[in-house]
Length: 335
Image 1 (tube, rainbow, N blue to C red):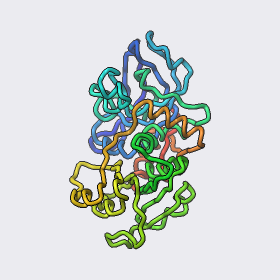
Image 2: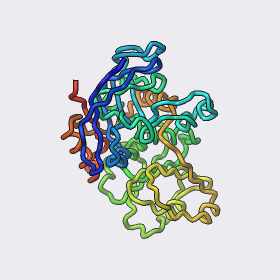
Image 3: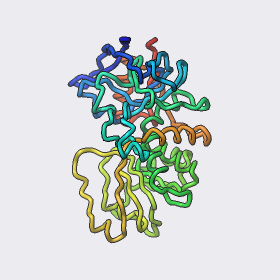
Image 4: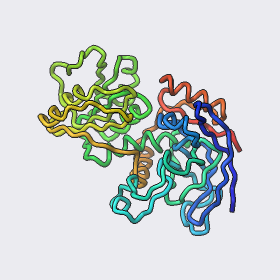
């Protein structure tokens, strides 16, 4: 069965273009009508490539392939970074399917589909159930922003007794503060200025440090961090960050580019500091995030914008200028 639906692409000049995608519903797939989509900084990376944008989708299942047992028609589901996994490689079998050796994912596969659209055709086993207690506008940012920080907080040995640093109070950082605080961690926020201090403390930060006057050196009496999530948009001063860590502490670079970082390995060796790469979240990790957020009432702080050409352009402009506090959610008006 062929299905045609509306999508939004970026063109080579970075403009938003409305288009159509036609897909055949395969036996293992579901057709999901998108109601909400988050806008992520990663979408800006692909804005000039011509692909359909979006990987933080929430929608309602309207059709299912003949082999699909779950989800059911009428279920509300999340559609994220992962489009398809093989289920049989070592990474899939050990709970790390985000690194599936045969995966299809946003940005490298299925360029004619994304969540900034009226609908998607998706592998049923890659959809994420959304708890009834979480609204769709709150669930959408969890599919990438929440997922990315939750993988760190849940898969790399973070304990409630740990000092957890968050560098940058933005789309990822504000959720990292809320989630780590809900886990009982001592949350230490690092920011360029004092402008977001009140909000960060409201999100659950126990300490807030504006780094603009540090002059490349940590403050006197600094207590080392067990974990540091790098969530800011600027290029970090890694020698300074390494000096902020406790012995054996781990730095997680969550916002990166393709340029060299200038990390001094000798400074890492002197104190046993680690740098841990990580990517979004595997399916089970995302399911656990949704359950945790529902139970502990963790919600993103969102700005709602219509999912129209004009709305998308406005959201992209504001995101590029750093004016979104703290996650843009596009509300679908295509029916």
